[in-house]
Length: 152
Image (cartoon, rainbow, N blue to C red; front, side):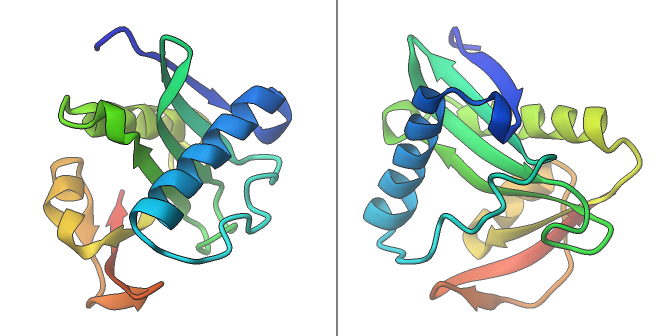
């Protein structure tokens, strides 16, 4: 899809350049674009089982998500978060490819474990397309409406 190379790496497998690119993209989108001031570096990136899913085109990181092992964010459930498509790559359905890559990664690493996410409320139907079901009322996370969603 659009000459994108996908990879999933643990923290220790990331090069310093890859680490810099993913942190730069997270700050660019979540802090600057969404004006959401929060502690992005929460210690979960370095967990031995955390998977950093990256979509690269022509050497540029254009899609990213972080997958956390069971019990890191939620008891007995995997979590997908920090889901980003770079502004320069939006409008080509790259988000769908990113979520599909994440689901494959979850299946490969934790085949019988359910997935729980904290989704921005306006993206509920997007995640529902990928098999997620809303399991909570709306709540505020960093002043942005979110809902909890699960997928078996």
